[in-house]
Image (cartoon, rainbow, N blue to C red; front, top):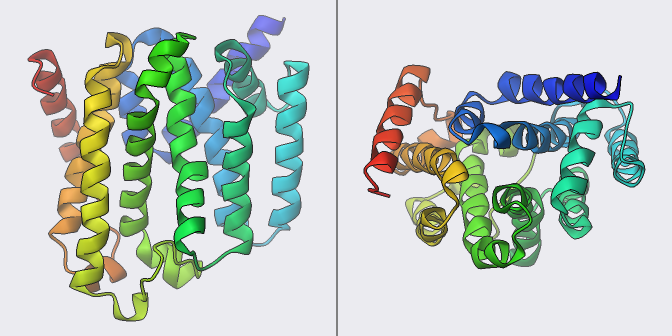
Length: 278
């Protein structure tokens, strides 16, 4: 039965999301119920590609990513895949008319992680777009439910939110990215002597992205607004913790928010949303 196969496929994407990201899983639970499966499906796809380039070091990552990319296009064209992650993703792509350019840009950023360790200003902006902003746009296609006028209106703030999330991740994960994987995402920054000035410049950029994003969150349809605001609220709190942490500590530790605090943020963001205090 195809319906059962599709259900199992989405279940794999849901399991992937819950296994890799408690914060993202919480955000999805705050979305309207009809939005859960599509967003799980997008996250599962993105996560699998990211795992290929970030963790499968004992294998030929270039070959694995190339195969995953090829199989993605085949799944979208056939409207089915024996790979459950790709089967659930292709359904979302076809149902919500997610542009191929977004998917292609995403793969270009994943390929950059295999071939590029130090970024220029241009490659940094390209990477942010392909690795984060397009993911926000994929989700926005779902949230706006094929209302292209609303999608175009909210496109810029959705991109800014994705960019803010990714840049916070970069700051949080400097130890893993730079010391373990040898990657320097922020252009012009020497992490061998990461200074308060360097950190402050990056933080101003992230603050601007968050401010631009919030205006768009306020305009989202009700079924998606609460979950997206929770993700925004959580990441802004994480960013505040990073801002309070000296550069030398950011270089040597991964800033985390304990699960009990995540639950507290969930309640606070829910109340702010309900009271229209966004």
